[in-house]
Length: 207
Image (cartoon, rainbow, N blue to C red; front, top):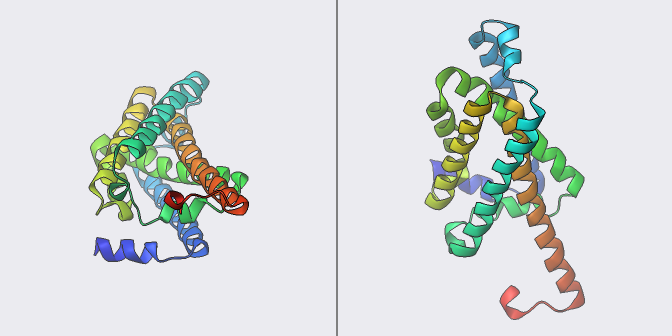
């Protein structure tokens, strides 16, 4: 079942992938709102998860994001590409997006997912439930054990960060930076390769 779903996603064109991405994030946000309505005792307790703590947001959030991105880049260098292959979905999604569009997508993804998984689920059911669900719902990674373990670890890191800071904005900012930086790398690598093709300097190993 999971492989069939992953294959369906893999064979979508960039436009279909983008539509699927927006649809999934709207669904996450809507589910989060419905659950929040029933789980939070008051609007005051709901507002508490959005505590505005600038130092925690822009210092702790940024440090967490840079550690995750650094570890991910190291993984790309040390681990065989076949173990990190998601079927080219991320490349298909981000390599032709403009940088402003990438920023918008990264914010939508980080806000919707952190709101549901950390703000609502983790607040009421704990870090284990929220983190496992977060990882499992990344369907295309379920049959790639390195990617799946990586997503689980990142989820627990974000969950622990939320536990420590008690501010959803910290994990939203960290999640945003992680997605934005990695997506921008995909875009930059694509532009670099495209430029090499134009100038005719692509080597046989890069083709």
